[in-house]
Amino acid sequence: MPQWVFHCPQCNTELTHSQIYVSSTREPFTFLSKPELPDGGLKMACPNCRKTSTYLRHQLIYRAS
Image (cartoon, rainbow, N blue to C red):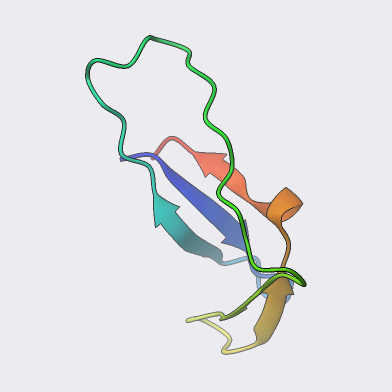
């Protein structure tokens, strides 16, 4: 399933922000917009190295899975 991900700046582990649920009725190649994040970014702790980082919307990466 496709998802929006970040990469930890410390250890480069991929962190899942959210799953992307694509409807079967959606037109092929429809543009998917990135989800909104809180002002100032989203703080997340890496499950691998435990470092807490603040991620911004432009750091979200589409992963087709």
